[in-house]
Image 1: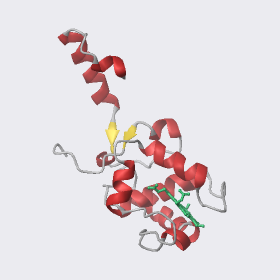
Image 2 (image 1 turned 30 degrees about the horizontal axis):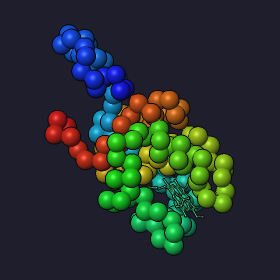
Image 3 (image 1 turned 135 degrees about the vertical axis):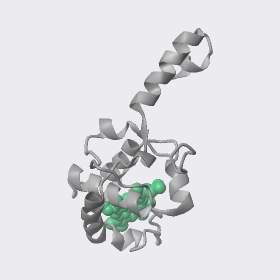
Amino acid sequence: MGTLCVGMGTNSTRRVVRGQATATSRSLWDGVYTEEQAKRGEEMYRKECASCHGDTLVGGGGASPLTGGTFLSNWNGLTVGDLFERIRKTMPQGALGKLSKQQDADVLAYLLSFNKFPAGKTELQKQVEFLREIRFEATKPDSK
Ligand code: HEC
């Protein structure tokens, strides 16, 4: 990353680098989960997460909100993979490891849907290396 910022490349090399970045990067505004998946995730959320994070995801009693300004700014600029790992490694608190990767991906789809990121035609995958390619962009870019 750092080497891209020092400005030593010629114009042509810089153009190539930028072209690759756009070809491979997606953001939450590209429709990265399906409505069906979010529905499955909602059921799982009600069973495994709502007792602490609340029916409307606002948190409380020490559990962080999973919607709203603070949540969005916590994750803005990171990747969906980071949020997935956070859930996998630390949640549900007190019952760690209870959910499968697929169930975590479904719950994540529900969180995205609740936060009004658009649904698309393909499901959110459960492999973290793919999820790391999706940028968590809190505000809608002008081009979408
Ligand atoms: C027993 C209560 C409890 C349950 C159940 C629970 N959480 Fe949490 N969660 C917490 C607490 C407390 C925190 C904040 C402290 C911490 O980071 O561990 C938290 C933090 C989080 C965060 C970090 C939010 C941020 O912006 O930093 C995420 C994401 C999250 N939980 C998702 C989930 C999901 C998804 C589930 C269901 C699979 C779940 N949690 C179940 C208590 C819970």
